[in-house]
Length: 362
Image 1: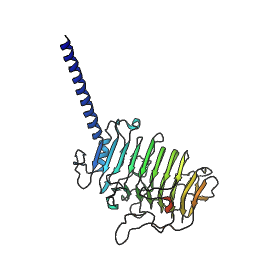
Image 2 (image 1 turned 135 degrees about the vertical axis):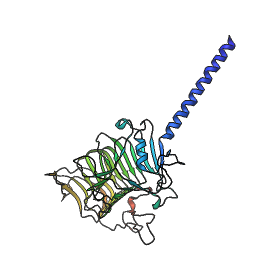
Image 3 (image 1 turned 30 degrees about the vertical axis):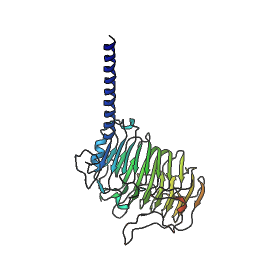
Image 4 (image 1 turned 90 degrees about the vertical axis):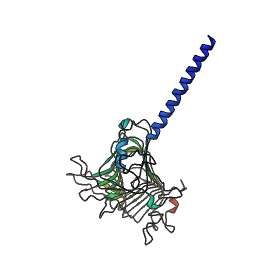
């Protein structure tokens, strides 16, 4: 009897070990399935999306993730190359807004890696048409429809579809969503041929933007409705011909530090008679047409127009408003490594604003 009991126990133990091993294999396989590689040069339509067999387009990759369970993190790793968006891409999984795990779209080679160069940044250009919503007259690159989304190391340029009246590379409209991180990205608009109405059109909570560069957008950042727990740090906004930040409502906390805003029509625009009591710290506002602007509610569906106003509520800590801002531009040798970052002889370098993550003062 003892021998039978011993063999039975051994059988149970072996079965449990096999079940555990099977579970680990399933989990590992599932986790691997949540990472997709995209390479416009080497990839193929219908590929597995592995590092050895990458997909060719962001559109196919994101369409695949729309059917993911939403129980494991999703990561899209994007190789160097130019990626064309022919229609709006929805960032979501099968669980939709119930999904709180991370969803990341990131460059395969990030800016701080030793072998990074400007030409290795994935370039995202849109050719999409206006939204299908009857009342809308604009196009969107990525529509964020879930919690906890991250964009890292990407270079967005505008929309070359001449029928599009306004283009927004990234939009999050649902005020119930939280956690959106945008880091080390470029947003470069050319109003003559690839315009960007607003680089980021955002609502909800937990929005964090760092080490980004916005150049030539009509407005760099649009904050729609109440936006809680917002931060903009170590970023450069230049050439916004409406405003650097346009806000329709306010929330707290609001963190704004180590930024450079230059050559913009306004630094910030807010609703009429609703100037926020925010703190701007350790930043440069140099060579802008106006500091703060206010707008009245739109009438007869016309676009509201801002007018300059005085600063009555915003507190400034170590804000510099005079000096010289010089950004690294394309030259005869091509696009420099530090493209649109502060040149060595520029003011504002104490902010450590720019595409690279370097130590900076608090």
